[in-house]
Length: 210
Image (cartoon, rainbow, N blue to C red; front, side, top):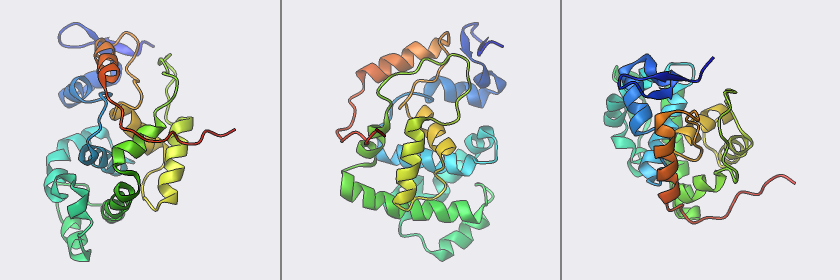
């Protein structure tokens, strides 16, 4: 089966994005474009954690509610959230009311502060895990990679929660660490150009297994 389908303008796009207008906008304007802003990186990893077991459409629809509930994903503010905030958020219909995932965002905000103190920025750390070789999607669905496995392992070691390798790979796809647009998707070239012009944050590469 083809991995692309004609969009409203007749141009080919990744098939998954044609299911709903929310996906189309997200695919064309966000998915795969490289990101170095720490707040956006933290937001995306948090939302991917909430998405586990749900559709991404649910998360996109509720994203304004998530941003309102979690201080626009400013992790320096979220790190100060208390148990009272957890109780408040569990009752917030604007988000996914999963106590464990809510608590994980607060925990991860504290871990993010530690990471910035140690590494300089979240971006400098995450971009270490960009694959050395660009993979061109061949139609084989990928849920994890060597890099996402390594990143997930390191995040867990540092105390982060809800950061399994599948969640982390989805984060890498969305934030531009990989370009997984289908080869004939009209957006793939735009993302490739954005990646080529992107100034990757300074940082040491993660140690590859020997």
